[in-house]
Image (tube, helix red, strand yellow):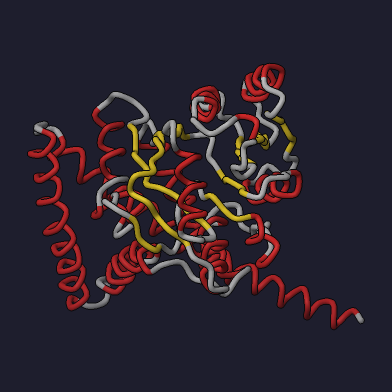
Length: 347
């Protein structure tokens, strides 16, 4: 008799037609017993061929289920999957990703061995395209200059406690103890949930020998849009929760704010022109050597030109998004106060 825990795998998705086949096939190729798992693909009403593709898997495999997520947001999908699931272990996977053959078994093994509440592995960022820009984007997302001290992106050798992990493997009782994902958060819901988990005394572990392949953006424009949205959801969640993300998420916001502020003030005083130049000089003092180092390591001189563009696009778009997130909080608060005052006057 197989006494391995029953695992419920939850995959939120929307318009992932290009990736969903590879994602599901990688899960099916895992060495974990298929009679000890169920897979819920929670689709946000995709307008491409995602749903038709998943239905073909549903017909072939009785443990795969397709559910509709009318809300279209990831948090709603995750909560729906958790409520439908029956496993004592719940895995939150991503449709834009493929998983190594031992991903599930290692996660479950370490979850039990170390009595952890959530375990996960490192992300290996795969270029979304074979172009120089596509490769440059993938490099930036795995480099400390691009994303700070995010160990699940830059990698570790053994294992360590972490504030958050991607594609986590949770004990079911975690959700019974601290609740579900925050439905107000369209992004950053994983990080906010893990912060709550840590605050409640939970143990989150990151393992270097567990890995998944994440496919990065193909073009510079999609990369900028993606990181702009990420920036918004680094700060906007402060409206709904008192939990703050790790400091690295706010550095781009401070950097871009400093540039914008000194740029405006430099119109009135030459002192701020000097401060602005110092800020930019310090940034480029770090940026250019990093680009050269990457170019030498990759043995491709072209990265000397592309990496500064990619890194600066990442930092500026994320920073601008973070500023917009704060502005949205202020505007929402102002509107709420106005509505409250209007209601008081009417009554």
